Image 1 (cartoon, rainbow, N blue to C red):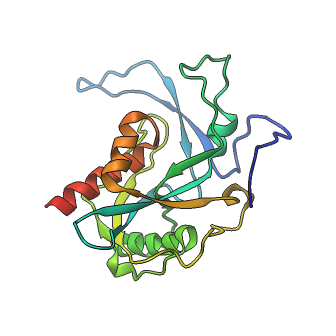
Image 2 (image 1 turned 135 degrees about the vertical axis):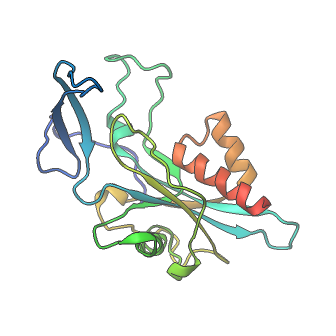
Length: 222
């Protein structure tokens, strides 16, 4: 289904029981000599469903050989970008508007996803849900160490992984989790080197996507 815009029905700052919550803690630094700093407040975002996320580069080898690699990108709604980047207050440098946003498949690691096997399991579930491929969790490979994307805002860690697939997705337009937030998503293939170059040019603006694709390229090159 085609999505042409977003209508904001209400807009307010809320906290305690949403998908994301604001946690406010009052702290003091304790120094080596036993003295303490003045008390201060630190705010950060928490996600009750799960703190960490798995980021997956889905790739395939180009038909006909030659060593070419294509990666699967998903263009979906990202509402914080669509409604959360005002043009005047506060000012933003580029003034661009966003509705659909291209990125790799990713998903929240939930409480039942324990250890690295749990991360692989979650990756396989997200791959089927968001990209339409059924893969065995054992086929999901980690691409080095996990990383913190925005340590000053949320304690989330990204677990970077990849999986090789063949052919096209089983679903042309996977429905995701069925919520309106995932309505209208579209899948497309792009050459691995081309996607990384597009990130540098600002045509593909997702940090986790650029990072996982660079890790994938390094891994495939050995």
